Amino acid sequence: MAETDDAVSVWQPLREPVFRAMWTAALVSNVGTWMQNVGAAWLMTSLTTSALFVALVQTATTLPVVVVSLPAGAIGDIVDRRWLLLSIQVWMLVTAGLLGVLTATGQTTPWILLLLTFSLGFGTAFMNPTWQAIQPELVSRDELPAAISLGAVGFNIARAVGPAVGGLILAATGAATVFLLNALSFLAVLVVVYRWRREPSPS
Image (cartoon, rainbow, N blue to C red; front, side, top):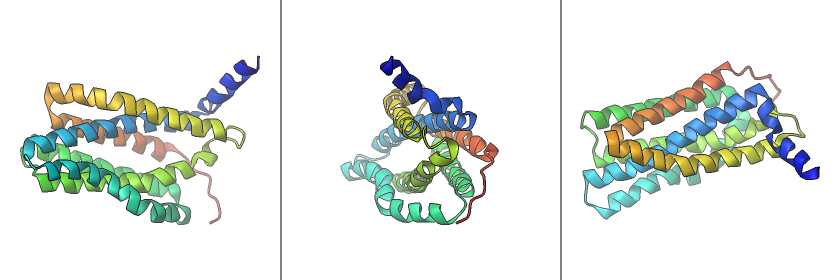
């Protein structure tokens, strides 16, 4: 009986409509991000034979997280988190959409790919600490450990599914489609966050 209770408690946060919508949107967005990573790495190999440029794709993805996460967390505690999340999603949607259009029209160069990949990594670095910080506003204190666990589950599902789906789309239609689908994944988060009516709290 104890195991049954634990299983129910793990899924309890999904009964909260706002958390469920946020969790689903985050799952979609994370799948898009992993698809983007596959598409960017593959596209770089078709743009140049330089091993350095190929390696720099991953650097451009992760370096912003290392450099910006600490100040991003501080900013998330100062400004309105809903407004910050909306701004970040618009930034990433425009960046991914621009990369998709440039790739579809054959205008993407290695440096443009690195710059826009870095821009997406910059958005991720700002989004992650703020996204974690809003969890206590979406569920009760008792449900918070389960909500955090579900966040990790969603991320790992996306990490498993995203590269596979991205590879299939890449083989079928090319990198531009992958980038444009990633842009649409940010739109999903944008809509959910926009519809969230956050309770104002003192700084």
